[in-house]
Length: 180
Image (cartoon, rainbow, N blue to C red):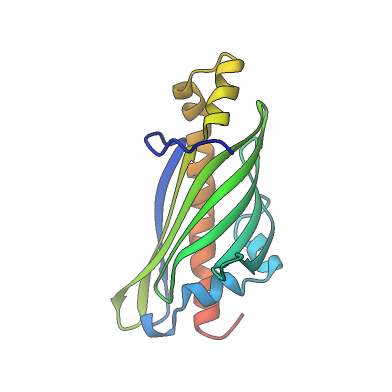
């Protein structure tokens, strides 16, 4: 397994959206780990392909997501480090299938909600991807500078997060209001 380079970020983005439901009705962890696949697919068409929930050998919740971000097919194995009603932080050693081959990245997915007022919440969706050594080796083998790869990857990651954030918020809102 390759080492993760946490000093480097391939992509990093944070977007917010409004949830029209009281904070005490929102449970991100329950929503995330009970998310039906069709609902996941509606949250970033056509990028979101499949999802499922399981647990790690030591009993931590895990979300498995398959999605296409730009030219990269990603299989993510998100392990819940924080899985609370108003905050989930998940970390994945993801498999990435790219034009340069297959490699790994550590993807950190952080979801949170805070009250705006008695009837609304602010949803924050943050994603950061750190390359593994095998990703950096593949770039070097193809004569691609890391900075150039970031210039290609970052816009796709930001676009994906920008599009999925309001759709995730709407899905969380439906779950909070009991209409999903």
